[in-house]
Figure 1: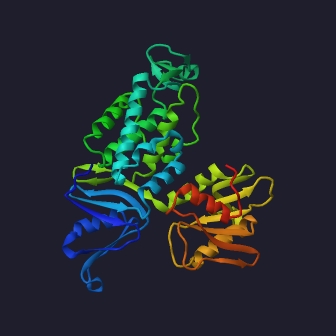
Figure 2: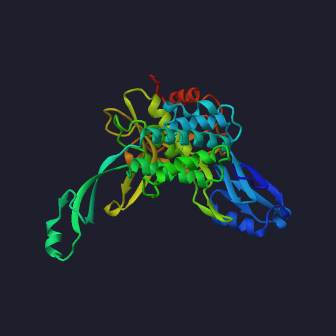
Figure 3: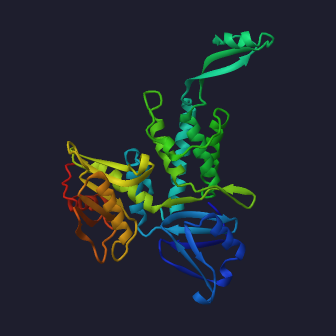
Length: 400
């Protein structure tokens, strides 16, 4: 784990004031430059009694800013709730990855334990032999392999090398390249201690000579094809998606690059609500995430709608939902306008704003033909019980 001599702890949306000498101008400038959307930083002035004011803006995790300074961004919700959200959002529940994390006290410990599980599973696959597949190649060789490209031979008869087209049985395929890149990101995080880091490096080296190093996005880890020969890659790719989704942009700290561990709670809340509904909705209901609604001339503009609930056989969306990971006294006018526009665009009469806790002034009103209201998917209680209450507030009775 990062051994910074100074660790500053922030909790979501709770301002923290520090003495003027708690941060140097260089450190504050680096924080603002590298993480402007994660931590709001106001410099000392007469407006704040000459103190630094820091505010974590809906992100949790760990930022090793320099070799001497790190930031812990703590969630409002208990860690067990965060783990429960991860299980649904990243399909980790079926693989029981988080069963042993009930005793951990920090996000960094959870990260390290998952990294340990991931590295051990990669090394186990290395002992069995990494999955290989036939990949088409084109190469000029001194001997014939596969099929000769006669057109190139005719165009360049003086070339003694033979242009060959063949298939190579190789481990240098996406299934393995994803694992290589994920292990590299974990090793760069600065979070794992010497208890786990050597294992991560050993797993990385087991793939390093077999695969081409290239970056992958979290989306590369989903909707992949699995079969008898590579079915054990599915949990590995589920964990890869988790690590890649929470690896912030790499930046330089001292003499080496580091990748912070950062969780966008607003995005996680949306993904969790969608995944929970998909697992618990009755069979005659479907939920769609991030549905695009195009409009304007030549459909050049679009809305990206968080969630759309449809009843099978219905011609129009039944309910349009927009998740809001914040707890204001009342819904913002622009949020109401947004979800009403979504509903009108899709031909729905039900628009819902979903919050993680009750509002002081909830909304339940009609705007034209649209019924717009606020509902709660609580993160304070047992998530499955909270989910059942959420479905009930939508007028849906779970059958699972």
